[in-house]
Length: 135
View 1 (tube, one colour):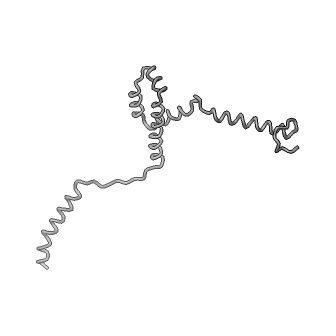
View 2 (spheres, rainbow, N blue to C red; view 1 turned 90 degrees about the vertical axis):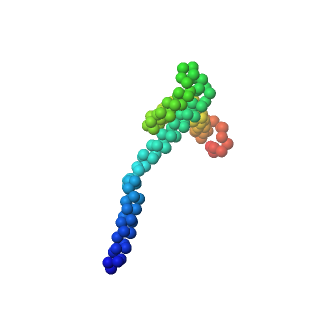
């Protein structure tokens, strides 16, 4: 038994030294749950930046920036410097600006109102436009 201890003592010392050397330079990992909102906000920020950059690629927008004395490269650098919340706010504001948006919806709504009005007058017998309406 004494011979086994004498031979294992140096081996155990070497094993302990190796364990210390292996675990010394590394810190323990801290794992935590990531909230869904955090992941969504990051992806929304990148998406908003890409929508703003797509707007800056247009030639008319570039010309308007140059006319205002703004270098398009500087504007691009400023967009990259925006926080996620600022980029999302700007993209939302750009979506709300009515510059030409909603023209198709307006035409469809007007056409639907005209169709329903003509259908109602045809049902009441004032007009004879639609052949599928029975009097």
